Length: 397
Image (cartoon, rainbow, N blue to C red; front, side):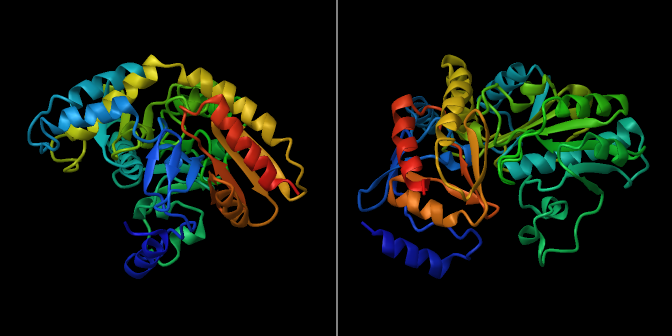
């Protein structure tokens, strides 16, 4: 078997350095635990950025994969398939919406929502052709495709990639007056993360999302909620927008749906909005393929069968309370909701991540100064305590 040193050397030789990963190789995993090639064991407190919400190799998801592989894995969208329709029905009913547009990655789902909002603006709202505007927030992270880079405020995501896609207004996050000022007769949509996870786990003030939603409704503007990282129980509600009792016009989903196995994403909305897509206007070869759809269906069934939403709320509150026991003058703030938690430092956070790895805990820094924790929703109280002890020991002065 190839060892960790060899893996890192080959990766650096043959793959571009666009991620700068921490110096650890993961070769096996089960539940919340993973191992490197040498057999060292670690607790996964990053959860593949929320994609492994049920941990690694959840038995029901593995069973669904094996069953589907015995039938068929990929069908062109030139034909119907019997897994996509079942997944779409369950997701539509869960969100109380009419229909979905299946895609593969979160980035693709965001692109889909943008295309939908623009066509809706021209066909339904009657905005002059090619003049539609979409409002986004500073420090957003909606993906890394060229259009998403265009409205990013992260210099590292933009440098050298212009010219950029026009049609976006950028306003401060959690600022209702800025939103009101940015709206014009050409505004098609407000695209927002209910929690800015990549920016460092920034949570808006209570009532902000509700007021923003109501103002959008008043001005005939679509409210698009990016729940790629926060959806499906992660925050202690089914969806993060539920904390403000908001039912957006369009949900954007990803990560969770793939069960930690394969990419699958979707936007979800009502027919009067999503009907703007017509044959030939949008699509992707792998979007809604039977194998990924069977995994997404199993993931939604697991979510319904077990009390993950309640557990995320309870364990998240406990986790944050325990983290606040840490005595470290370099900690600026601890923020979180449910099982999405950030520790912001005054200085760079990466060295703390390296030290946590040495103590058996996997996490990752984001935007330089914040450690983000997104543990699998299946984590037990005992497993969380195991991780907390090592986090406190590592981060305490």
